Image (cartoon, rainbow, N blue to C red; front, side, top):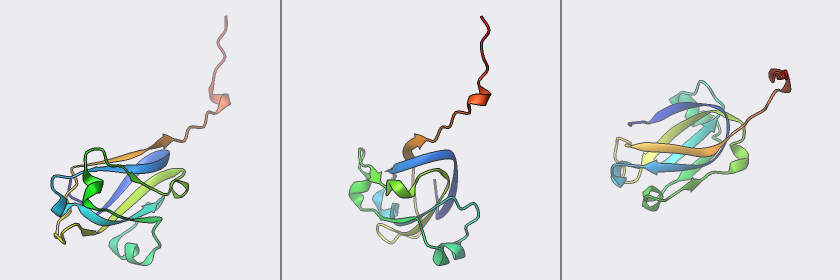
Length: 120
C-alpha cells in the first residue's frame, strides 16, 4: 500500500496501538501525524489543524513483534482516523506500508429495546 495521507473509517472503536509491516525500512514512515474523527482533512488542513498524536518511528518499530502504543485516552470512540506521513526513515520520497493493523476494542452499546422476548 502506498500512502501519504489516508482516511480510515471504523465503527466506534477504542484504539490503543498500531502494528506495521513494511517491505523495507528505507521507505517506511518515520513521522506520522494521526487525526481522529475528522471526515474531511486535506494536506493543507494537516498543516493547520492540531493532530491527536504525532508518533516518531524507528527501525525497531517495524520488527515482526513490534507494537507502537498510542495515548489510549486520546483514541476513545474513534470512528475515523486520518494518517499523515510527514517523512520516511531514510528521506525516501515514497512511503511503503505493506500492512497496518489497528489494535483496539469495539465500543459496543446494547440497546435493550432491540432485544425481543422469547415466548415459551
